[in-house]
Amino acid sequence: MSKINEYHCPSGHTTVTRDTEPRTVTPMFITCPECKKTATSCMYQVNQSQQPTYEWFIPKNIEEMKAACLPVYGDMFNDDDYESMLEKTESTGPGMYRKIDLK
Image (cartoon, rainbow, N blue to C red):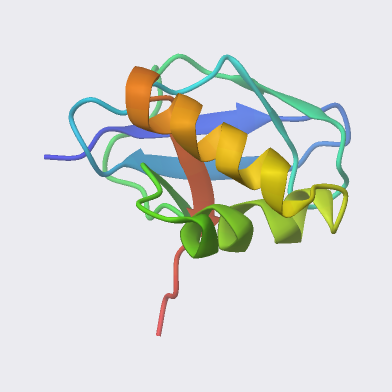
């Protein structure tokens, strides 16, 4: 069963996430996908039955890493940056978050 978490930013946005893999390490702070300000974790002390809008996952290749980064950070990284981030993700397990397709 995946755990649900919330992140809140100073602008009042709430990002609801779910963990998809047991070894995914999630951060205390993320960049709010709405306003790009820093959003803070609720440490899973939230309603676990709510519908998440984002999910944590471990990217398997550069394309998945880019797909997770581009909506939040734009094109500020080059291919070497993505390769370095992917290597760190594979070895330590920090996850990336991506929007869930709710269709």
